[in-house]
Length: 179
View 1: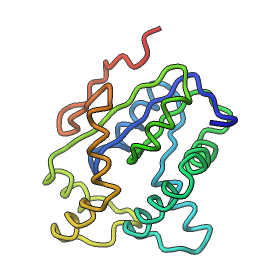
View 2: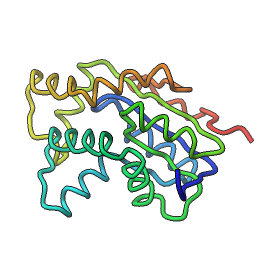
View 3: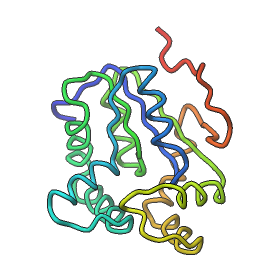
View 4: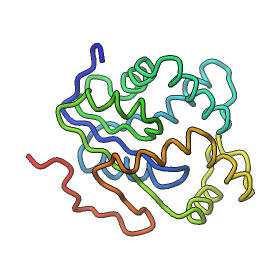
C-alpha cells in the first residue's frame, strides 16, 4: 500500500465486547506500540462530520468505507493513530479485505482473535458506557451482533495466529515477536 511500511504489526479481531480493546491496551503497555482503532476512527470521522455515532451507523459507515476504498480506509486509520511509528496494533479488524491488505504492510505480523461467549459479551456491553451503545436488551444486542460486519469478523478466526479466550486470565507471557 502506497506510503505505508511497518516493521511490526499486530491485528486484533473479535466480536462486539469480546475484549479487543482491553487486549490491545495490554499489548500496547508491553510493547509501547500505538493502538489504531477502526471503531475509534469511525467515531472521530462521524463526530467531525456531524454524523450519528450509534453502533449501527458506525457499522454501516465502516462497511461503506470498506466497499468504496478499503486501502484508503486502512491508510486513514493507521495515519490517524500511528503517526511516525513503524510498529502498530490495529484493533477492530472486521473485514477479510482489510485483513488481506494488512498482510503486505509489515515485515512481521501477528493476527490475534479475541473471543468470549455471547452472555459474557452482552454483560460487558451492559456494563460499559460508550456513546455508540444506545440499546440494552439482549435481543437488540443479538441484532447488532448479526450485522454483516460482525458476521464477517467470525471468518477471520481461522486466519489468526493466536486465539485468546478473554473470559480467562490474559496470558501475560505471550511472546509476540521473538527476536
